[in-house]
Amino acid sequence: MFFGDSNTWGYDPETSLRFTNRYTQLIQSELNDDVIIEEGLNGRTLCQNDPYDPDRNGCLDIKRCIKSHLPLDILVIMLGTNDAKRMYNTNVYSLEKGMNALLDKVFDPSLYKKGFDIPKVLIVCPPRMNPSYIKDPKTFANFGKEGFNMIEEAKDYLAEVAKSYGVDFVDTKIMAGDYDGLHLQSKEHKELAEQLIIKIRGMKS
Image (cartoon, rainbow, N blue to C red):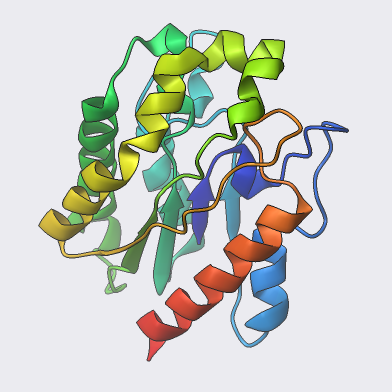
């Protein structure tokens, strides 16, 4: 199961519609013996409460998603971008704390009482923002320089969380497209899929 935000949902910033060639679908095409479950939600955070849409808090939704789709063999988490929005008044330590809180819920034994195995977990560092974000009024207003820097610094903090929980981590070093500086476009979806296919195959072996 892929648990993420608009880049997992496949948001196309040019049309506001959904990429059909989003990375999860490309992975499904390659790993055709597996069932890829998409749990992407536009605006989803690790644990911040969006005052305009409280359903976007990942910590409040992860248990429902897991219970809905059991059994799961691998849970892929790519979150953190939206936590860097100015309105949350956060810093890079918030990503570490948010991922800790999310993983505490993932590993809650009560989810697996009926004999289901706890899934392996892969944390994917969120894509870097493209420097072109400064040209997009909405992206710049939402994130600013401080949000850009927060996402740039996320790797080390999320890697430390992964290490402390004994789960897998990957920093794909992928940068968002230049349309709005925030969202993946077709090229980046392809690159992300290629890297995650290799990682997932390694986790399954």
